[in-house]
Image (cartoon, rainbow, N blue to C red; front, top):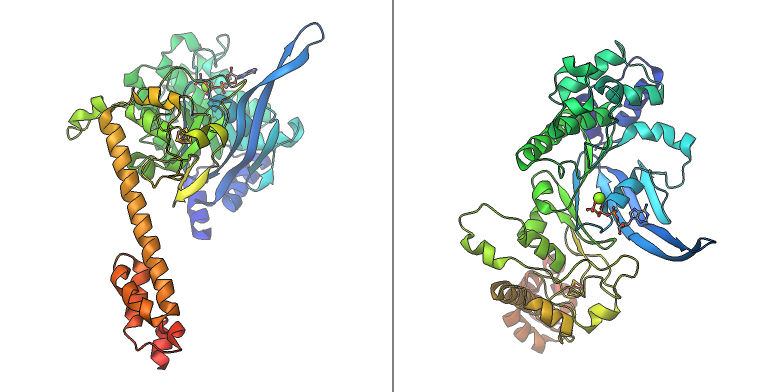
Length: 461
Ligand SMILES: Nc1ncnc2c1ncn2[C@@H]1O[C@H](COP(=O)(O)OP(=O)(O)OP(=O)(O)O)[C@@H](O)[C@H]1O
Ligand code: SF4
Ligand SMILES: [Mg+2]
């Protein structure tokens, strides 16, 4: 890790030298943000916006925009966050950049609890965590020149870069692919893609460690989207940045993310590395989101017919559905889904999912197989191929798990009684653990049979 930390330090150019503060910021980065180490950790994070009514503005309810989420972001990685409109992505982004005060939970940055830091306490942090906003049209002040906009962070932090602010701003403009000579122009003289580049230059001004990009390309033409996403990708490599990139569908984040968090109604329902998520999504909602992304793969000719259409709109975050919040739209929902909230569990290495009947896995509650009426209606919108494939994988994984369990059980019994040992031998081939035991059984059964499963035990004999 320490080696990585050194590499990281080398790859980050000192942009804002010339002041003590800037030098110490670079030093902190060298010391603290080794690649792969946890940079940001979020625990039980909540944001409930109160709904007030009447003359006395009494609180009558709350919008549960973010309702208890846990995740971490490692230095140098890109975490993609996806989910439908209104699921709380922007609120989450504003919470982790501390632009919003959380209702509950904690946000730690480089191991330091920053959840309730005031303006003064947050000042040094503001250099390290920057945000790129969704709309490049409204996020740039139309009355300010590009030079003033990109140079503003230096003024706010009281930092004078080496060579002066103008020179540094021009350098930043060329880093993001803009003409440095356009320093004195106004935002309206630029296209959407160029404006977003200006927003990126502003975010990079203070050499941040973490950049939270809230739908950085959704306001742009598709042709420009790829350019901006590629720019973000290149900058990450060059400057050793860590990203949280928010998007409403998977097409934007699929190429740039190392890990992806899928949000639904204020909760993270699945969090996994990109490969696992694309190869075998486990939450039905992830599967639905993924089926909506067109994949240019000639081998998947039938991809269109496998699209999963979701029933109705996202329910209101003011009174989210009981149990699993997705149960009103899920084609697999059973009674337990309506009554019990599934926790986010690591069901496969690096893949956390909150579901009672996950896809590509054995059914978590096989005894509970009666579908809710809503689920039957939802299932009508799902292609038969998808339902059949999901049932087949679920059955295959369940059979595999049962086989392994059976073999392990037989092996255990074999250790206890020599008679059972023979039958264990037959079943053992199915499981690796049982393989070892089967070898051990080749030795004559004796009162010391317990030791025989251990290689050392065999050696002693
Ligand atoms: N300041 C606020 N006051 C009250 N409710 C809010 C506030 N900000 C957001 N909300 C509500 O919180 C919920 C989540 O909003 P948020 O903007 O985080 O969603 P989102 O996932 O970013 O959506 P989109 O994809 O449309 O940007 C929404 O129901 C929204 O109406
Ligand atoms: S199967 Fe149940 S727990 Fe899983 S997503 Fe559907 S409704 Fe939620
Ligand atoms: Mg948003």
